[in-house]
Image 1 (cartoon, helix red, strand yellow):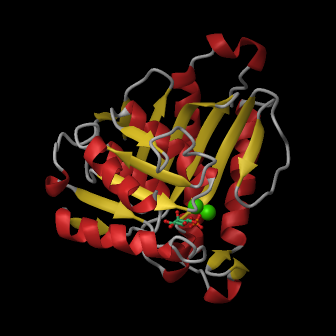
Image 2 (tube, rainbow, N blue to C red):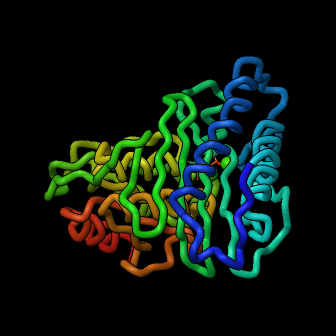
Length: 274
Ligand code: IPD
Ligand code: CA
Ligand code: CA
């Protein structure tokens, strides 16, 4: 185990750090995989309407926090299940210990661990490990983006009419439902179609590697999007909020897409959401 000295962080190898985070995500994923084989729906707790959690999410988060503290002791945490309240002065990990909990509890194979490192208010490293397909997506400041050691890039498709999009369905925050449904209808009729994987982190990685041309959703939290948005950008894509601004990590609205048809994609979102 290697501990990084935060005082020398600028000289620390972010590539090395990111690879350590990949290792930590994979170790924690072994626990999640093992629990899936014996998981009982009776272990599910409800945090809010359609918002579920179990000991698997919480234990996964504790394991991640323990291991990430080992490699970067002075960093704090913004973690979904709130198992650490430590705030870092300069560095904070943004963690979703199990993105796709509804899939996990129903035995549907699409869920991931998402970990981003934020320096001040800038993401400098992102790792998303999709557990079922053993796909580890990652990038660090000024790097390319990678999937299991191979460089990935966003799709070259230049038209929305040649695009496959992903979204997440509103499941508790219905105040923008009408706009959402109108936009959904528009995309149904003007793209190859839409998918709802059930893991926003995975949706974003699929944009990064060119499987989807774009992804949009509202009411997401920082842990859903921080690592994925960064990986999309490092893969050559674009990410904004619904107005085309930069408030997509904490602003609860995100549009992410390949560069070539991003303007057309964002303009459609703007037309229905503003
Ligand atoms: C959820 C997933 C889902 C998205 C939800 C998220 P969770 O995260 O990312 O795709 O539509 O809004 O809350 O609860 O499974 O970590
Ligand atoms: Ca999530
Ligand atoms: Ca989660």
